[in-house]
Length: 84
Image (cartoon, rainbow, N blue to C red; front, side, top):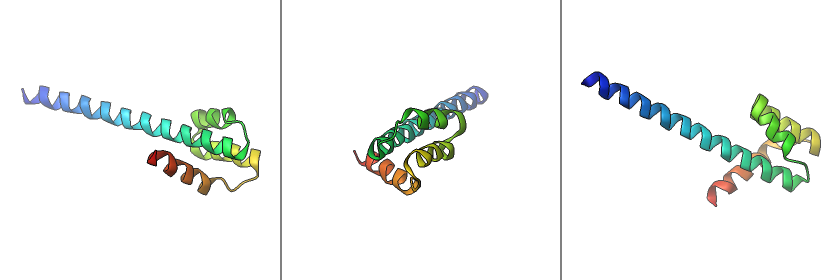
């Protein structure tokens, strides 16, 4: 009986962890889209870089497209999105 409860608890924790990762990815993608539109750059290359290589690559794509200095502005966009 305790083995079954432990197994159920582990599955629930794995589901929660996966869900939190998904929510975080969505928040990051939303902030990248906001940042790209504020800087007048297309969001699609940054989102593709996020999916393939991660956040640093996505910020690099935006920095190349708009002239750098995007990391602080990304964090500001993400904080603003969380407040909405």
